[in-house]
Image (cartoon, rainbow, N blue to C red; front, side, top):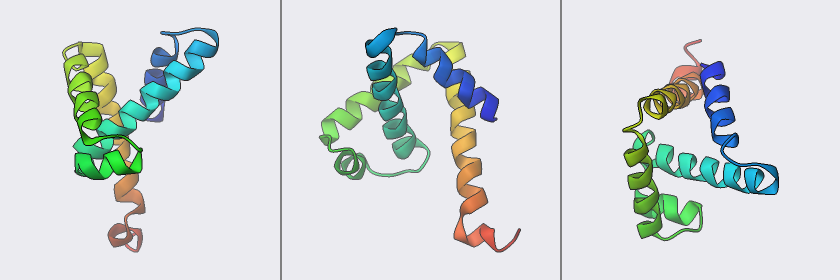
Length: 101
């Protein structure tokens, strides 16, 4: 699972070079966090917008853009792996399941 996430982030990073690469990676990671917060965690676009200091319409645009990228099989598989990792992390550290370990 960690390998899939690391590989996904590495693929995103390769899209840019130099300072633009760092900026592009940071933006990509922010967009992924926004998307995951809405889709995986079920948080409202309004709440995510507040957390990231973005307008709700910007959050909606980011989520729609990422959904469009999911038409690319390799991106879709990568995002599936990241979503699974987020869910596994939440389950592992959830107060309701932490005592069950």
